Image (cartoon, rainbow, N blue to C red; front, side, top):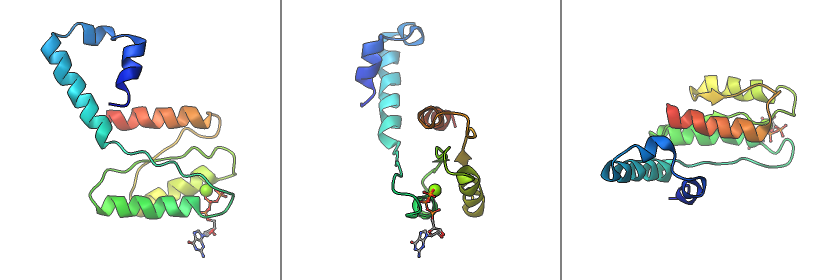
Length: 119
Ligand SMILES: Nc1nc2c(ncn2[C@@H]2O[C@H](COP(=O)(O)OP(=O)(O)OP(=O)(O)O)[C@@H](O)[C@H]2O)c(=O)[nH]1
Ligand SMILES: [Mg+2]
């Protein structure tokens, strides 16, 4: 439901406008269900407190609960932070989305969300 006001504010996109009213209603219901299932966890904290390690533990915990997990590497500042997460992801077989260190963290986060909605 959370994104529906956003859709309304931006107007109905053409591909939705082209649908019959009933189809559009069903489509919106599936979007709402998908959004309701999607859970985002943002890890933030002081340097070296164990964020990345906790990400790995959390990801493995959720994976064992048969949840689909994606870790998104947005720490573009600390040297080798992305490599650390990628290695961790390999160890626990959890995918890691990353765009290197040139992109902005907020853009990587948005791209990660887009990525997860496509896979
Ligand atoms: N004893 C102990 N050490 C931990 C724990 N979690 C992480 N560490 C260690 O603390 C250090 C930093 O852990 P990271 O997970 O890289 O911490 P971070 O918050 O991501 O660090 P930055 O990205 O540099 O801010 C590593 O040496 C970890 O092995 C914990 O629960 N107990
Ligand atoms: Mg870290």
